[in-house]
Length: 71
Image 1 (tube, rainbow, N blue to C red):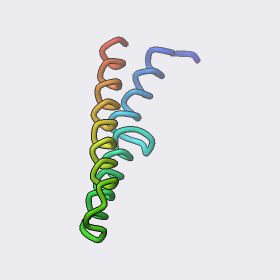
Image 2: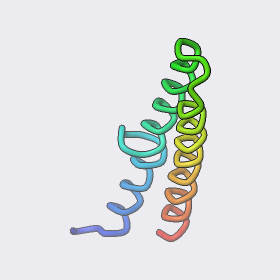
Image 3: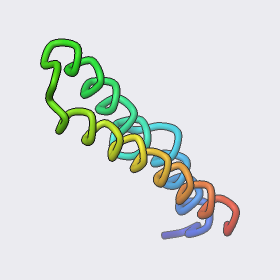
Image 4: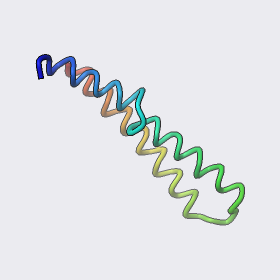
């Protein structure tokens, strides 16, 4: 890598704010699970899954923030 700090910063930005593998995907899947609950009422697993994905999205945001502060 010619510029590791920039590459790490860019990757943190991609994971936290852009792209499809980090925060954005987890927020999208949280919304999907919550919407699914409208059609499959009584499925506690959907509610729990949505809670876990929401928490994972928040964790990804936090990790990306820590990385960008380091570089």
